[in-house]
Image (cartoon, rainbow, N blue to C red; front, side):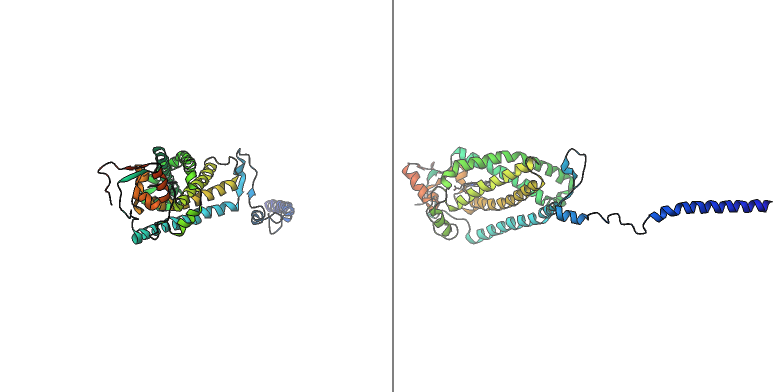
Length: 336
Ligand code: HEM
């Protein structure tokens, strides 16, 4: 009897197993042996190539956050991490190298006839104020801007993450806020010196003769010579370009999309580093490059012989107006 009951138990168990197995077989039979869930879907790579971006659907208020991929972002990152630092390094180090070499070969451009002891007013107090306001802003903007491009590679390893974070935060504030007086300065420079900076035939001749800086000729010039006009237009157009693109970046997506923001940033970066390189040459000429130049923006007056050498036609006009004066006694050494 016990053996019979045991056999019945085994038989029921086998039947139950068969029932479970047969119930499971149709489900398993529905599953294909090799699964390919994206068989009929468009490949991601195809989408990116065709549409230049992949957008998802999301409920975030800022719909720009629904962009999942856009190859232009990779190009932009490549520009920032590789191309721009290269352009900046070549332009700035190249310019510094040229200036050092030039100084070693040519030295300071002297006032050939020495100082006359008579002076002529070159820039009034307002012009000098505008110049120095713009210059101070420019220098801070340049250093804080270069920090964005080069700081992480050059400064961070030197001063450590804490100090670099603190400095970068202040640099960014300075960069944003000083953009306003800088822009005002560029507008005022444009307005107050435009009359003397319209290009003329005289400038072509001046540039051809190296302006008396390269070589020893002293081509005639009015208030601003060919070289200064080049600087003036670089300041006006370059300053205008960094201002417009800078404000587009400062107020993101106001009238621009992602592509517009990227273009603004690329233009801002390239014009910015080239602007710095050019202004290094200007600062060189205004300080150690040329005797007697700095006082034009310092005290506002220049020596008559300096004016004769660099701006002969302008000096004639000033003389005709009776604007040449004897310097305060003891300050200047008469040379003749
Ligand atoms: C430490 C920095 C600077 C120094 C020492 C300096 C020096 C000078 C000097 C001496 C002049 C008068 C030249 C003359 O009498 O003919 C001058 C003119 C001028 N400066 Fe500067 N400057 C500096 C920075 C800047 C900056 C940053 C800008 C603009 C962003 C600027 C824009 C101009 C312009 C447009 C002129 C008139 C055109 C010219 O002379 O080239 N300067 N500067």
